[in-house]
Picture 1 (cartoon, helix red, strand yellow):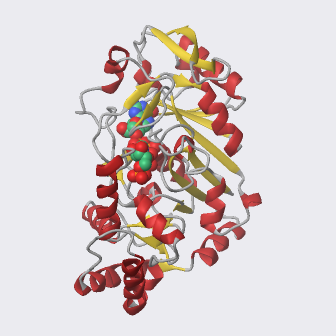
Picture 2 (cartoon, helix red, strand yellow):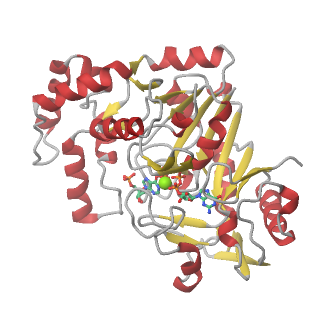
Picture 3 (tube, helix red, strand yellow):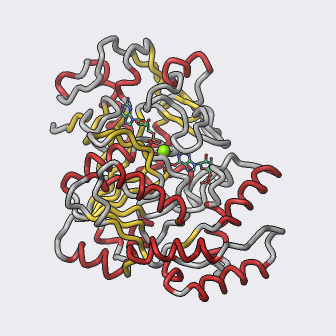
Length: 401
Ligand code: GDP
Ligand code: IMO
Ligand code: MG
């Protein structure tokens, strides 16, 4: 079985928490695109984590985890994430790295920072777009080049002579040797690796980064990332036929959030947003898990969810952060836009005063919360399979209706 967990909005929908939850019955979890621009929050018995590169299946005993081909990997970030987990007693012995994943080098980060300074779109300044750009130019080393540092250095020298900017392209030999020592033992041939799992009937779970509205091809260009969060890319990255994807779970927040610039039709006023944002003291407050920036908040946008369904073919929805709407008197749901524009038309719905925090049983949800969920299902045409009622792994309603 192949499951793809995909962001159905603008990122930060709660993919990390849900991958940690769903990994319970997975044999292999694969991060399929993006890099350490991700901040995937996981809260479980090991602690509170903002994961950047390592799949959130790493906390599941017995599961293998692969940083997949379509990702861009900053070696220092990967190594420090491994060390952080090890220190906390998390078993990282079944963590693998695709030998076809591309490397993020210091000059990518430098270039990202320089471009953002000149005319930014609000990137995470992790060199993501720059590593993908050099990949497309075919002047970027892949993880497999750590096996032979002469090959790796040749790529760096080609990047330098491509002369995209006046940057410091030097990466000290000592650093390259350290990356080699730490990361070569994790390398696998990803196509063999992933297909072996799929063809032997194992459950492979693909973890997306960001969400559909930030997809380089299908999102709100240019306010997007430089990879394809959409579900189909899991097959490209995994090197297996698209027809083998059995399940596409779209993760959506019960409202909307967006970090960085770009169109956001249902953006809330500051007064509407304040109670949902928190002050940053809690791990589920609305501040970017990667950059700490205050997230822009908005009402739920069903046009966005219908679009997510159109381009991903969602087989189920996962609605997170329902508990954050507790006590909001009047909920606004964007059911469509004014024709020819992206001006939202809202349906007003009464909220609920009861706490939904930690509820695990659908029947225990307040009637108005159920009405909210049922409206989403009806308007998007996809059933809600799980509902998040708190930030911790087990704060989930598994819906069986
Ligand atoms: P990701 O990038 O999609 O993994 O999402 P992030 O981790 O960046 O952001 C999601 C935020 O919502 C994090 O702060 C999570 O701890 C939190 N979260 C996820 N699901 C729930 C939920 O059901 N309820 C609450 N209260 N918080 C949640
Ligand atoms: P997860 O996986 C939210 C946003 C940035 C910017 C745009 C491009 O945690 O959902 P980039 O650094 O990728 O070139 O920035 O994408 N962005 C994210 N927003 N969550 C993320 O990841 C993000 N990764 C990138 O804010 O608008
Ligand atoms: Mg995030």
